[in-house]
Image (tube, rainbow, N blue to C red; front, top):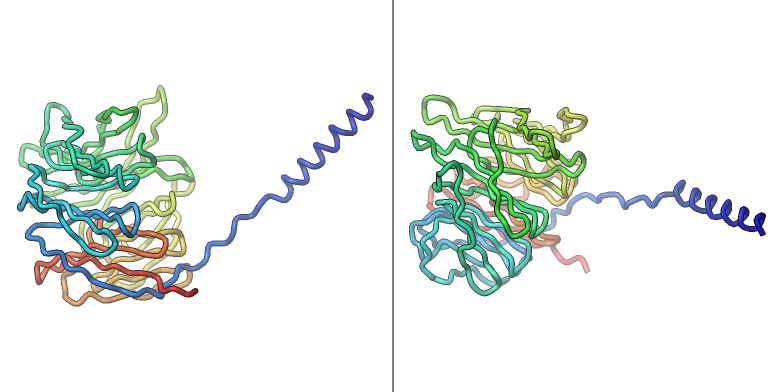
Length: 354
């Protein structure tokens, strides 16, 4: 009996070892497609539209700072853009969500609003160091119970350089310690490969100093003081700007004309963009499907080369930092056509190959 048991155990171990020696290899990432059909929507709006987010191509939200308080929030239902024309005393600066009935807006005055699928309501009014003039410039998170709103509040000279990061968890908001950060927090992402957070701030010089972009590394570890280690900085000059973007769970760093990843605490070049019109801003679905903002249009990297998808009709047109919503077969880009004062939403659909 013992001999039979021994043989059975050995056999099971051999089977396990055999399985481990032949792991399942994930399919190779295919080059991103470029066969899109484009449409351009014009939103008749008297103020800024700066952020866009959606749960699906038939549920896309677009917001902008106040002016006309009846039209700060716009929605696309798959057919048309519309606003509900309801007066709200808010100045939306960011929008982010998790489903069509769980959407958040970050505003000025430290307020957070929530959409439950039917109505928008104020759910939080946050302060830091006694200040409530917080502008939540962006939002991001991995789950409905683990996400962040971030931005800054004004210094004495009214420049928004006092960094703020608020964390939502267990139905509560907590203001994080941001000692060591400078500037308005524009990006705050977790990088799946090393599980570290990377923070990008925009420091306003106010004429005395040049505007600049700073990138920090942040590792939240229990029982260890949380520190923000500055790993990069650049002035806001054409061709030298910096940015970060999260693509399929991985943070990509835009450092001038270089797109890099962070490996073993060092920047590792992923792609060099030789075109001098590169505007230091990217969005993507995966490493072979990346959209690049250019001063004269939108380009695409498919893992092999870079090609333009379209050119802007007017000079001085740009896509905002939070100006993209990407889905499997459709994408939306929010653009400011400065010379005409129009806000354009470039909407593209992949052609049906079926």
